[in-house]
Image: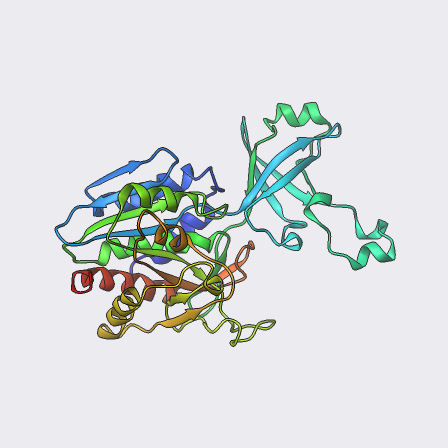
Length: 348
């Protein structure tokens, strides 16, 4: 196995919320450069690496953005109200340490709220909403915060680093979808194909699949694969019947997500991905989901329609600072993507 762990840590520890993915794009460009013929950044920030070939054209989409926060207002005492960028579960944010990106560089803060010691009995029974939270950067007043470079529109991310667990598992932030970015880069290293490859680090997936839609329109590939993470049903609080995927059993191959409101993977695409897995003895799991969707939905509906599938890595606790996955699953996901692209000409 190549250094999947090192690349995942580099990307996970980096910061880039939706619309502000430049830091991630810089890393991806450097990692991708040896394996493509040219790289460009389009008008909204998608990073597109092209590997020229003679066979069918294949788009790989891996979104670079992470969910985060944006400063909304700095009050008289220097406390910062904020909005969420992307799908946060409110309780996850409370008491987290964050980094704000101000005009003068990074500023550390904490997410605070009214202390429970000063709540009445009814208040303590209710979860605290983000509207009742604020970021404290230690400023004495608004002027102090402004001198530190904080302004309405400053972005913020969780201040946490990836850590190793046992059994080749790791935990960190933004595995959704930096793990998918690693899958794409690693597949580029492993594939041996005559196909034309468009490896796209997409932007603004978490706020509406925006980068996938515009880049797919411009590239108009013959077929596409989106990478992402998927929810496993192998831990307390959830059952396998609700999320029939588990860690260490290989990548998920999406059959349907969001109860069909997202992607219903075309049969030829399923035959291609599953056929490549079977031929190369790569374990995989068929993933049928009632919630959530990916860049594949936007790509699939572009122009007159682009056949699109999804390869996803089982990942616990998504949209939190402690997402958790198996590096073995990530390795197998990259291998399946590479082998599928190697034989794409047999199917399309």
